Length: 483
Image (cartoon, rainbow, N blue to C red; front, side):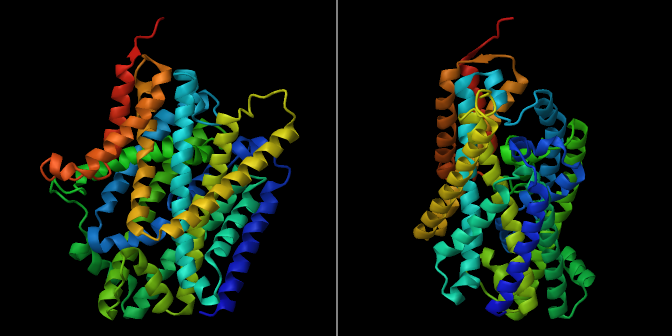
């Protein structure tokens, strides 16, 4: 795979992306950026959200997990399905009834100023940390397998990646992302399907025959029954359900796309359709992982980390065309999570902290200028964070930071659950302290769980504990509402 070929493919892909951007961003205004003027077709949103929910990290990591965890991740995905049902039937009706642009304004209406700022602040912290980590892991792969061969410095690689995202999201925002995500989802799914086909050809065995071998082997095991295991099937299922409720239903990035639909009914149709597709796509990723594992065992391919399995085989063993397919798929998986994060963070800062939506005295062009400044400033923060992660150069530290980013959704889960399922009033000024203490306690319990709980290891269910501690803290400092 020559540098010229890579550059040509990337240039063609970029031209397609900017063609969509030009078409969708014409006559865009602030409402186009925030909620797409509420005219997004639900089926387009549903399809495009696949790319946003499956980041570049998923593109590399899920296939690599098969060696260590078999198909047990599918139980988490089944939990996702039930989580999406809760979002469609409980959260979306609330958001549409209150006509929210930022979903965290609900917390102000329900609890007060400090609870509102706490919820929005935790989203901003988690999304900046999580999104920049995801971007770093993808950009680092591109650096190792592509740009190092051209002696291109890492910071230039990062600058190109982030500049592209700024350019095509700056004006159109959600109205543009709904359509660019559709394009990128298509390329990502094609990359997975074509990779499966290339592997089967290299092994000289039809796809369906290989799939049958996988399903008949221990690799396809989904249900782990050892309660001490962090991947026990019940833990996996409940964790998947509440991860979805927290990281989709209580996440401005994911909900912003849903709120761009014409009405609640279309948003619910989008959510139900999307949830079904997600199950099928994740299963396809696991099948790809099993195929990669068979190929690695047959050809004696060894890698230091499971995340490197897919790129190593694609670039070094399957030929130049397969390498190009992987590269396009990786970029297509990386862009939707990055552009959505940048747009949602701009929305949250502009509305939740700068109050642009409520400032009627401020001219529209001044609001737009302020939004542009916020947008570029957040992109600069991403740039700095990615360079810091590169300087750390320690995968163990990066994994811990990723875990910490996940902890920040626990307080959001506790806040929204308390607001929806109780009628009590909280002491608003205490909320920030509760929201900070809960994830800290969870981190300590997780670090020493083996010693404290007779060998028990926390998995994804730590999110539930985090939300419960927040809920309990709010209850402790609350009182019955006065009618």
